[in-house]
Amino acid sequence: MKTTLLKYLSVALASTLKFFGGPIAGVILKLTWVETAICSAVGMMFTVLLLTYVGGGIQALLKKHRKSPAKKFTRTTRIAVNIWKRFGIIGIAFLTPPLFTPIFGPILAVAFKVPRASIFLWMSISAILWGLGISYIAHKVHFIQDWIK
Image 1: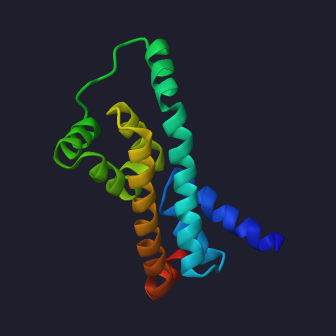
Image 2: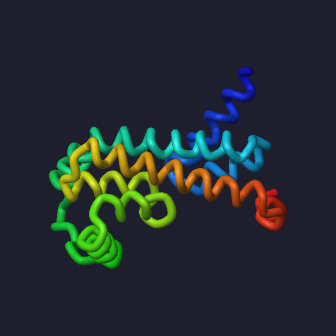
Image 3: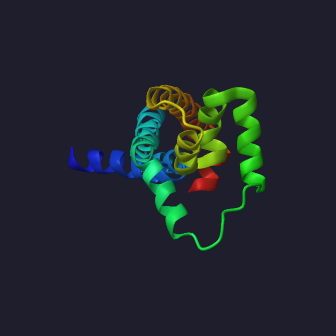
C-alpha cells in the first residue's frame, strides 16, 4: 500500500513541473495507463491551484524587485496573446500541458484576469484529456516504452 502511494505521488510530482514527466514516470513505475493519467492530472492541478492563488502575488513580487522593465513583446508573450485573442481561457488551458507547462499556463491565465472558477474548470478538463491521451500513448506504443526504458 505504501509503495503504491509513493508511486502515485512520484507521478503526480513529475507532472507538477512538466506534464509529460508524469506519463514517463508512470511507464517506468509500471502503473496502468489510467492510474498514470489520473496522477498526472492531479499533479498538474496541484500546480494550477497553487499558482492561481499566489500568481498575483508572484507577479507583484517580480515587478517590485525587477531592476529594468520587463520586455513586453517576446516570442512567448506574442504566442500567448494570439492564443488568448483567438480562443480565450479554453485555448490557454488546452495548450498548457504541451506548450505552456503547468507553471506558465495558470500564471498566464491570472495575468489575463480570468476568474478562478474558469481557470479550474478548463484546466481540469485539459489535464484529464491530455493525461488520458498521453498516458495511453506512453503505455500502448511499444517503441515509446523502449525509448523510455
